[in-house]
Amino acid sequence: MNQTIVITGCSSGFGYDLALTLARRGDRVYATMRAPGSRNAEAARALRDLAEAESLDLRELDPLRRRLPRQQVGARGIHAGTPRRARLFGSGRRDR
Image (cartoon, rainbow, N blue to C red; front, side):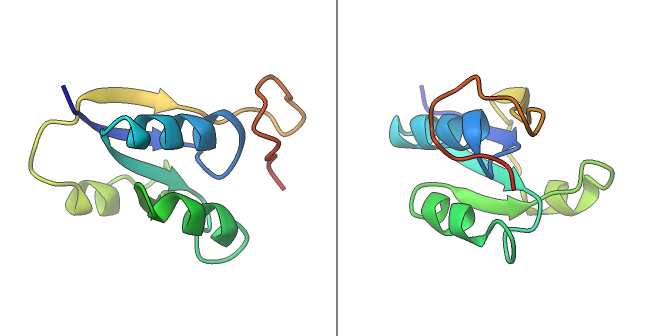
């Protein structure tokens, strides 16, 4: 079943790979990250072909809530952010 999924930390690493994987399998993905229009523009462009790349500050969720469709989000709480020096997953992309 296709789901609507919100993922944070999609500018690199695990979050980036997870967003691509879920979007390719047919889920509707809101791939959120800081600064998709500037320092993370490359990641946002790559994700926009398959997912909705959105700016998100976790301290201010109301703007994202207003943009989400009025349907149930299928997977909640997927936070893919990792410490800057973590190299656990193999996308080759790292936080800047």
